[in-house]
Amino acid sequence: MEIKQEENGHKGKFFVMLNDNQEAVMTYVYAGKNIIIEHTEVHEVFKGQGVGYKLVEAAVDFVREKDIKIKPLCPFAFAVFKKKGEQYADVLFK
Image 1: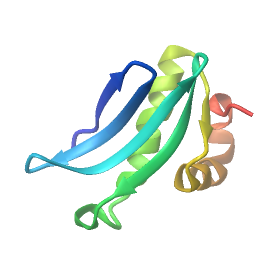
Image 2: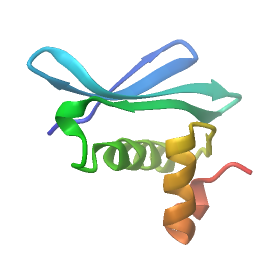
Image 3: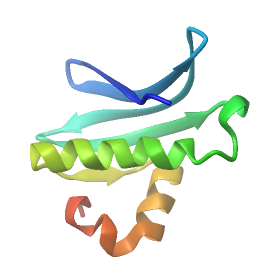
Image 4: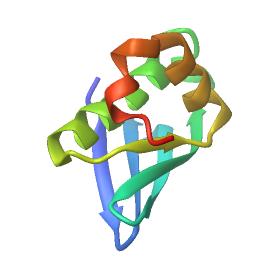
């Protein structure tokens, strides 16, 4: 499975395609130089496979490379950050 990323101005997304359909997506917006994760959606075809976690992980890798932070407003992303605790503490925008 390949996680792709697209940006359009101050908005962006991480997503997974399957048979030419976007089957999982996590959207974000820039707030200054940092990003806010707004929404995560995983369609039934990927349920239970950890795809949502992989989308958050892709965002974490992205912000670490850019030396910026994430504010996870999306309830799913917030729960992942809470669960990962110290592993993601370096990228959490408080």
